[in-house]
Image (tube, rainbow over all chains, first blue to last red):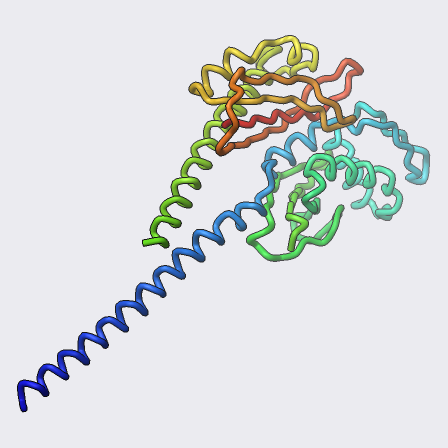
Length: 176
Length: 122
């Protein structure tokens, strides 16, 4: 009688062990499978062009077209002017109280160039902050704040008056 | 067992992708720095000097016998293909690695252009 009771109990324990083992195996398998399926999708959001490299070459590139601005008096931006220098001129104008719309043709050219550099699968946003971290200028679409999909780079810039600015480029995949 | 086979296969494919990406990055870095110094240090390279140089030896050496394709495109102020080099390997790629780098170069019209060096390795 006690021998049969012991055998039943051992059988129950063995069944319990098997259930626990298979549950653990299923859990581990699903974790591994989800890792295997998820990892490449995250990598797909990464831009093929490095934001730091992009910001650097963008600021060193020529504007490419002649632009006429109405800043109270007629100002001509020649096609071989560097984008960084033009941005400097714009920041000085804004600090002197000129409206952003006075620089609209220049900002549209910046926008076209940035879109060409980051490719059609990505959004970009160029933001310039002053020393108090106040946004002075923003070009491009608002970027989703999901850190996994957004990649950024920044660079210090000093205008002719010695005022420091932080230029920041954020790139995000169009897929949300 | 099936799970472990699937996962190990997947991890091995990921490892191969990473190796190929690293090889592509190595090639693109070397070619871009060769281009940047084609007119001497601290001098913006010209598009003419970039297009006149032969990079096939350098790329073949860095590719360690893998197949490769290198292209240089102008992205700004206009889009056009400037240069194409590829290996003789005609075998179908099982997996590929990709890297690209942007650089400035002086165009014939005196404009500072943006060029992109793209490398695919398989």
